[in-house]
Length: 159
Image 1 (cartoon, helix red, strand yellow):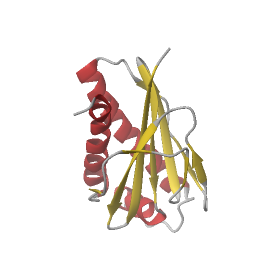
Image 2 (cartoon, rainbow, N blue to C red):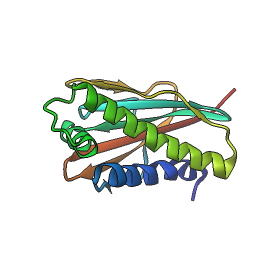
Image 3 (cartoon, rainbow, N blue to C red):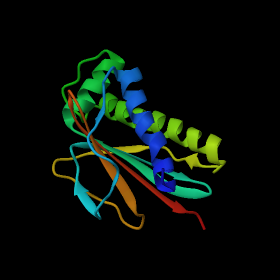
Image 4 (spheres, rainbow, N blue to C red):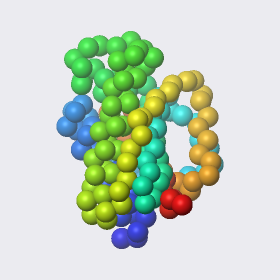
């Protein structure tokens, strides 16, 4: 397994485990991580978290509205009508926080990287263009019964 794949693998595992445990949603990985172009169009709702330490980077989770609404409903027990509802946004943000926290903890435990997470942020918008400047990143496409999911991971050495 390549060094980069060793860094990406905890994120893949954490996405599958977190969606299954918290929301009862099975995530199917459609492809291997591939280098992402400079920009891509959002599926509907996106959450990003940055990390820093011996290496720095970001984890981006982008999903279709149906997946965000179902995850929020399954976690909170409330039916939501809009991805702009503050609880839907908070749920997506917290999912990212848990996924990233678990993945970064695994990396810190295995490689002693001393990585810290920043708070996640979340945004939504129709045909929103996501630009990924400065850091080389890799993406993986996934699907669920409730919609598509894209994950994007980036790492670079800290100065």
